[in-house]
Image 1 (tube, helix red, strand yellow):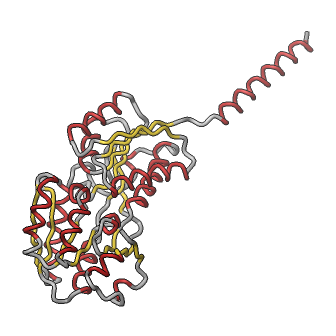
Image 2 (cartoon, one colour):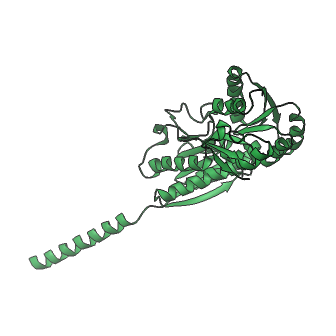
Image 3 (cartoon, helix red, strand yellow):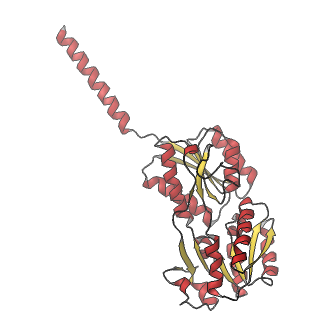
Length: 321
């Protein structure tokens, strides 16, 4: 009898150990819904960097990607669908997409990227203490260093043009900051607003007659039309500085700015803290880009007859559009 009981116990223990081993070997697959406001190189790079970052971190993830094609009501519908489907995490790319995600759910963790000022946009209470179900990465640019590039390229430059989308919060705060910084650099900011992308070619035709330099802020509509903008500027031999790398790939001259791909990978590390480590977004501070780099467009440099020996191009990375 004792022998039979011992055998039963041994078999039970063996089955229990097998089950435990099987469970430990089985990774939980997380579902991440990505809502992206629009399709253009910067936002695409933020998405690609995020997905690649998750792979590098060996996180088992099912990605559900939806693009709102620039339509805010559509971004809200996408976010609501993710909330109804109870995804494990929502990754919102661009401010309006993040605002839509916040409106859709108070429970599901939300990570954002390509948001300049999440406090100004009422996504979080502060950078250090989000105190909500959202956190993420800011694409805030080093505006002073970027505006200073105009002076280093041509000390005589005074009038700097900024084209922006009149309905984008991110643009408002950047223009305010640029105006404040421009005072000590003896520069004048001339702004021109557009309400849709179809207005940009005509707006640029008149704008190039008023300005001596052009500064591209991180504005989604402007990023979507950057090749049209750069063509108008280069035809009129106007020096241009971009806020980030994709502006330069689109034909502007130079930037000392962020890489949205790297920003996406940085956000993926925050996703690990939430999905794997079990942290709440409310306790994860919003992060700014950890690295900036100087990148210039070699074709534009040659077209504008800029001296390649200028100090700005030393140790900078050259790209060709």
